[in-house]
Amino acid sequence: MSDRPIVLAADDDPDILTLIRLALERAGCEVITAPDGRAALELAAERPPSMAVLDLSMPHKSGLEVTEALRAAAPTATIPIVILSAAVQPSDITAAHAAGADAHIKKPFSPRDLRVRVMELLEGSRAAAPAQSSPAEPAAE
Image (cartoon, rainbow, N blue to C red; front, side, top):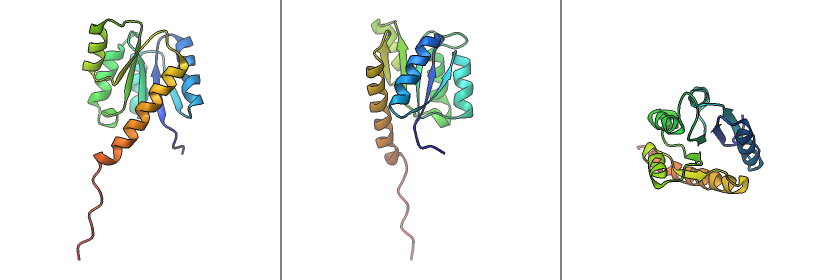
């Protein structure tokens, strides 16, 4: 079993999914892809990802709905989530963060910028992980 981070990428545009997959595989991630929000949630339930990159506007469930569902499920409640969107009005960005997203990246995006942001979020989540678990208790004598 690999210790590479698993990134769930969901977008209804197959070209964008390919771009995300290629960019993040170059960074050493394993990328699982979904063409819509419902499929993204099914994949996350089968194989909880280390992080998610979600399109805002998708069929069946929007990126915001998927974000809220991931936040509500214990295995994915604390994973970093990036919303990709051409919508960059302050209200859109506020809505993404209110749903639980950690970052908002404007489309069109640079594969390099996406890769850098994803790796920053993954590193941040790894650094926070030890703080979430308690250290082992010393053995009682």
